[in-house]
Image 1: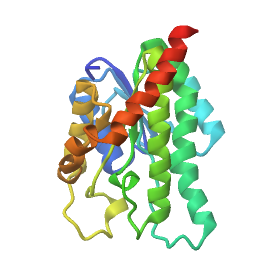
Image 2: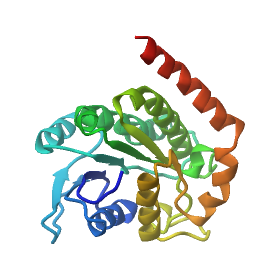
Image 3: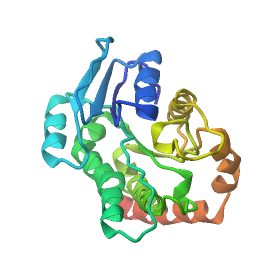
Image 4: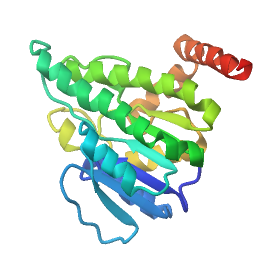
Length: 241
């Protein structure tokens, strides 16, 4: 899946990793980049088409689908991360609404276009999907759920020729992680590594130094082997049908 001459949609494209993904797609020769944001966005490159897109708003999602003629790569980057202690159910629900159900809603809405192009879905996740960060537990819960969603979609959509990539991002220098006092990768380097992973066909992408330190152990783990084993059950059903 080379990025050159492809049509890419990035949610949460107004800042941080999302903004860097838009620029990296352009640098790699994307034919069109749809930039989904909750507020109006202006971009000097004529290949960028802004979309008003709150991933929790069904009306805006449908309007975005109607505005996009074709799509090769959907990048579910929009997310929320708030500090909490699990004492407020509404905070957990807010994280799930954006990080899980928003990702699911946008994916389902654009799936017909992606099936036509035999395209790719790229879900922006986090190392917190593997091990919870106790200062942002609601975020960690939502990313773990979104990781499971990504694994399920990968198995279910393989028969349609649609690939699903999970991006297991570590600490990155964005507004979302401003309060974390740890070494952080730049959004630009993370965006480059994400597209490298898509072009290489990596199912799970580890785009920064901290996440890369876990890449080999995850890919050779019993849990990853079980994912593949479970996916083969779906593949068998598809062949039988």
